Image (cartoon, rainbow, N blue to C red; front, side):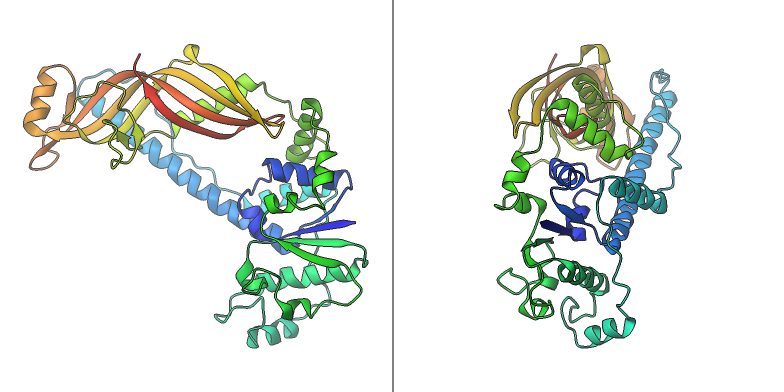
Amino acid sequence: MIVVVVDTTATFVDVMMSTTRWMQLLTLANQSSVTLVVPDVVLRETARHWHHKATEAIKIANSRIDKLDKSTADLNHLGVEAAVIESSAPLTAIPDAVGFEEQRRDMLEALGVDLQLTPSGLDIETVLVRDLARSKPFQPSGKGFRDTLVWETLKEVIGEASSADEVVFVTDNSGDYCASNGEMAPELLAELTPGTGHLTRVATLDELFDTPLMTPLVGAISKTDSELAEFLALAQATAVAKAELLSVGQVVASAVYSTVDQLMGEDVDPYGDEFTPGYNFSELDLPNSLTEVTLDVVEVDQDTLTWQSYATYDETTVLIQAEVDADISLIALAYTSEAVHLAEAGLVAVSDPHFNDHMAEVVLSTPGRLVFQIRVEHGVNYAEHCELERVEPL
């Protein structure tokens, strides 16, 4: 039997456990093709990390909402009708780490994952002796308490395995568990009971699935759309609630509109200068005297959204190009005299004529076609990746 034990480095890169590799691993666990062990301390650390990421996402969203509100106020002050800009109330959601942990626990248990508790026989004296001796996985700084709990859990799993079982430890935490050559540290291996399961360490889930152990198992996983959709619903909503699968068009639209919302306040490179950070808007005919250009508002015409798939790989991944027309509002700086000239020509509106001693802040609008590159997995209700690739003139 293959037993896979995951460390927090395998969950931190995807706290939702929704990438293809996680989906494959959970499928194999659900089919009892492998035994998947998630130590209790790993699940709890993952919930803490999810809480941090969710809190940061809310802060970013509220920052963008605040910028939108300020833009609306500026337009109203200038007598420009701004009713079309919908103001949003700040997000007040408080990420619930306890609720997230319970939801993940229910999901994993429904799939047959072994949520291994810390060994009941492990006492604080044992951990303290290891800490004081600075024995791996403790570091010279004293850091390593949670890593020690993971190791003790792994030791118990190996001790309960037979000599014919292959135990694979997925961790990228080589500094705490490994020697300088990347292999498991000899002093840790010396703690294992002879005649029990054979231990192998890999850094990532990708590396795990590249091993000869896993290759035939992955090949045996059914990959029809309906079966992937059924499993994803099980993985995301537990065995008692089946989620309705969205169409590819719905997934694309959701990804595009979500990405557009995140563009507010982002830097723009108006001239295709490789040394200027930001999205490349060089194909648009923007005045050549602007600097520090940022996106203020992007209002898409949803009726113009089109998409097409242009590549498929790994049998389950579809690459898609999507396009949508939009009215784009930019904020920029220009020298005061140039700002006056541009305003007289009707190319910009001056929002702050005295931004500093030499510069004025200006606002300009331009139509454009936004082109996105999107990656979608079959049977998944969201895009794994969506990026604005370029902006074309209309």
